[in-house]
Image 1 (cartoon, one colour):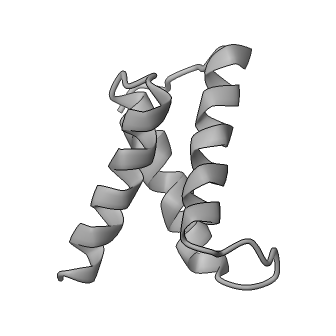
Image 2 (tube, helix red, strand yellow):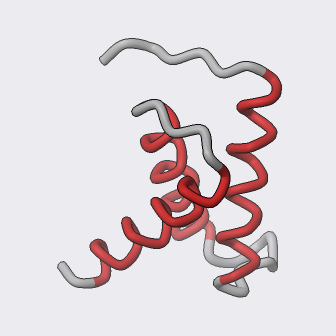
Image 3 (cartoon, helix red, strand yellow):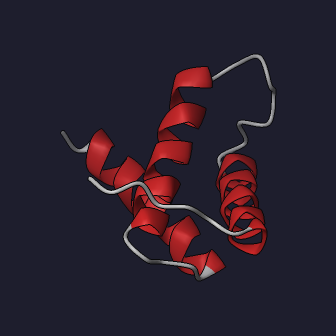
Amino acid sequence: MAIVEFSAGEMKIIMLANERVIFALNLTNSDEHLSIKARISSLIIECAEGGERDLQKLVDCAHTGLSEDASR
């Protein structure tokens, strides 16, 4: 897989998407839920590496991925 470089603006969107999903799932305690937070980050980065840059679509991508994980 090719390495994708993100601009500073793209990184802000990725980080904001990550924060929104964590907040929506009430996972804001920084010492708890580390594995699920890591999964959220991975899902968002995967979507961004695929070319997605829309904030809401990145959030939706993480929620979809988590739902798929839960159904397995």
